[in-house]
Amino acid sequence: MHVKKKKQICHNNCLNPGTKKADTWLSSKHSNGGSLDRYTADPNQRGVQARADIIRPRPTPCKPLIPHQPRKPISPVVMPASHSQRSNRIVVAMYHYTARESADVSFVKGDRMEVLDDSEPGWWKVLHLTTLQEGLIPCNFVAVERSVESEDWFFENVSRKEAGKLLLVDENPRGTFLVRPSEHNPRGYSLSVKDWEEGRGHHVKHYKIKPLDNGGFFIATNQTFPTLPALVMAYSKNALGICHVLAKPCPKPQPDMWDLGPELRDKWEINRNEIQLIRKLGHGNFGEVYYGKWRNKIEVAVKTLRPGTMSTEAFLQEAAIMKQFRHRHLVALYAICSKEEPIYIVQEYMCNGSLLDFLRTGDGKYMQFEDLIYIAAQVASGMEHLEGKQLIHRDLAARNVLIGEKNKAKICDFGLARAIEDDEYCPKQGSRFPVRWTAPEAIVYGRFSIKSDVWSYGILLMELFTYGQVPYPGMQGREVIEEINKGYRMPKPLNHPLPDSIYRLMLQCWDASPEKRPTFEFLNHYFESFNVTSEIPYLEPPTD
Image: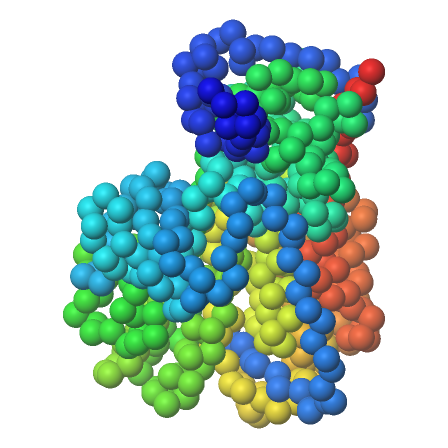
């Protein structure tokens, strides 16, 4: 073989070690007990219907936009810059998907497709390279071929706390791992690994993956690698100072679906004959909630609005607001049926129901302290998104948070809203609101703001850490209002897992001055970084 050609082949193999699947931890070489048991000690171990409101602030002078600084590419594949340059772009399926309409294409994990049009948000037109079928696919189910996003071990949008929850699933053996973007270094990454120690049991250890100036990466300074796949490959063969050899990638949860199908991404008024109501889940002041199916195949939750609750025109305007907000901790609105009464709101189904019922009667009453922290962080994350969009919930409570598989939490009823022109909302005289969750300025003056939602979040925390106890136990509604105005605040509950630090945070949420209450951005960061005793800081392996 020619010398130059031989050098080029070696160079390519170095740059793309992850593309040769037979050499990874998935091969028979690593499927037996031998390589999985290798261990290197780590000496450095250390009820009421909710409503929401959009705020339209007064005009302010325009500020120049700061250009987005993208993460430095970590794959040798050059990412196309525009649609006109994206011919022959190949993506690979990361999950299975079954077509829901005639316009979309079914595929299984590993299938390759050519992107023909990616101009529509959420859905791309592709050519399936095996079946040669053209159609639409949900774009969050695929990744560009040979990119780091196409690796089974790479998790794009996962926090440290969520990584721990995913890894600690009982089915995952010691050495299960994932790689995620660093929360602090825009060019760095984090390696999270499931480990086990006598006296401590299973836990997760986190290692910083630091970037080199030349584009490479390292965990320990004496071991550097040209690419992220090369680093993962090396640690899957030898622990090299970390807690355990990388045994298998953590299973990825199914991505969120924001639409029932591609044809309904814009047209979301559907025929109510397509909805099958199967069983009643609950009821509220404005209607009932059912478990159902769309076209007898997709699970949905259906909220029916009692006739006369609101005008159809007002409902359509407010439902349009709900459809705009897409976040992993907000319940997705799929469709509506508004041509006749009762009006149907068709939304994402969450298998464990409301957080309140989950805490009182479901598996939630057995949750450990770290699980409560995890739910608190998720709710704060969803509210941070609404805060950034200047949307007021007005009824944030445990009854309006839904729980799915593996304690996934999502806020519901945030979009039954009315547009307002100021930074606070004054409801109509005589309107009803839940006083136990409502801030004093909203009770006395009828003024709701982002900061009144923060007050409600503090009450939700009390519900969470008392496993669904009614706020202000023993008090009637009027007495609650009177005592709050006198400065009374709920005391720290006895016989419940509530640290002093979190109780002090609750008191900050209940400050009489709205401007002194924390932001949801702060609250999200607080619970995401909360150091539960089963967690440890980022570790540095020994460097010899």
